Figure 1 (cartoon, rainbow, N blue to C red):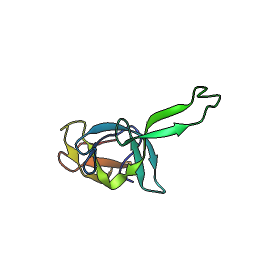
Figure 2 (figure 1 turned 180 degrees about the vertical axis):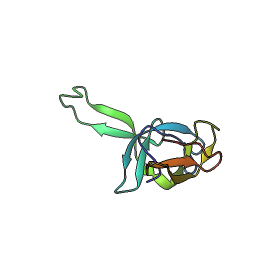
Figure 3 (figure 1 turned 135 degrees about the horizontal axis):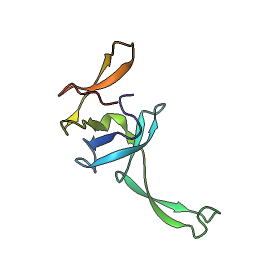
Figure 4 (figure 1 turned 90 degrees about the vertical axis):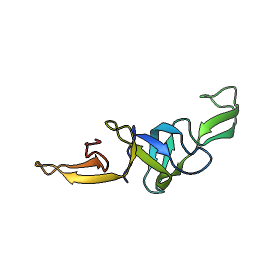
Length: 103
């Protein structure tokens, strides 16, 4: 996948289009990501030891990785992600706009 945990991404489609957020979790098997403050849903939670009160919680739901773009730290624009091999055979992600290393 072209997205990693901790990346800042921009949502391109859906009800939250145009919002930026940090990636909290990546699910590569399903090609989905969970972004902070985006795609919030209400979930009914039974009381448990962790949440003794229970109730209706608002939490982020996963969205498809194809609906987000990584934001470059240098040019501060949403960008496609390219890959490049460094001289020590290390594969890194690069910004397609400015060529800056994203990792």
